[in-house]
Image 1 (tube, rainbow, N blue to C red):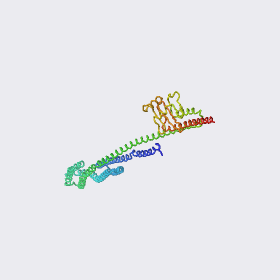
Image 2: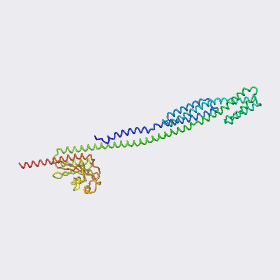
Image 3: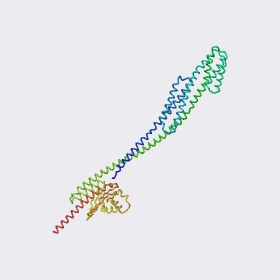
Image 4: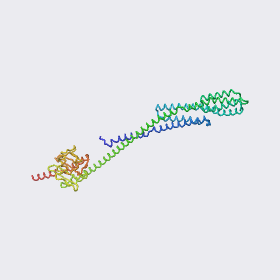
Length: 453
């Protein structure tokens, strides 16, 4: 069963629609939002870490009343890490980077807890130490202990600003020197309290500053940078892939549009061909009907009318039928203002035979100028033919006929599929001529029989 081009294009259209749908989904870049969320989570981690370090410094300076902000920020770090883990890809390198960052965040949480414990004691001692020094200085203004307390207070002040080993040793020396001094009357308890808080500050200040340095030196920034670069690289690759899919989508859309236009044009061409075929069949049916029971004296006029209808149908300027039986019979039609040369269409059958017919006995030359130079081309040019179409017919009774159409300016007279329909018109005319010939033969035989009688 023959499949028309339009029907064959339907599976191709379905395949293109499936490909178009797939490309549309891939061109959306479904990973873009996930990568954006991952980067946003990393930005949140950075902001929370900065806030944590700021509040730790505020706590160290005694400006933070409680440690609730530190707890909230540690919890926020864990939350942002969870969001980051949920939004990164399943790549092993990214998972390893998240694990390292989680380890560093846990280390930050541990250091923060240690800092909170040490800083609570530190702030308490820092609050009591100045009060005790003032009280001891008031009880023993001119005694040896007063000078030792003042020296210790100055050394402790330096230690709060510089917790280097040299300053810490100086504070230890001042504490030992004060401990060796006799206590003033009523100041023994205050002296012991001052020494206790001093020794605690001597231990806590370097320890607390060490915790701060370790907290700020945690390699989270390096791990964050590594993870961010991984995500950004994959985001760039995802965007490039989506861009390629969008380009593919564009080209497939153009291909689909071209195919739809092609199918539409083919369907339109087929519809026009069917319409033209229906018009041909209608005209030929009318010609055949009129020629069935025609009287001999009306034959020429009906053939002339048929030639005019067929010429109008194929947009030809001249039309003719050349038949050879016992004698050559020529019927011609031409538009107003157009004439036939003296030897045309008499030579049409010979020219047609030399140029070569198709298997269906048809010939269609769209432009005489394209013919190879020769006698036949010269004759066609001399006859004023620009485009030429003709069909031939050989009858059983020896009647050969040619139905020809001339277009003076070169143009397409008819399509190859329509030449077969013109054969039907030629058959109708030749059958009518054959009937006329048989009728004439019958009349001649009747006259001969009458003479014999």
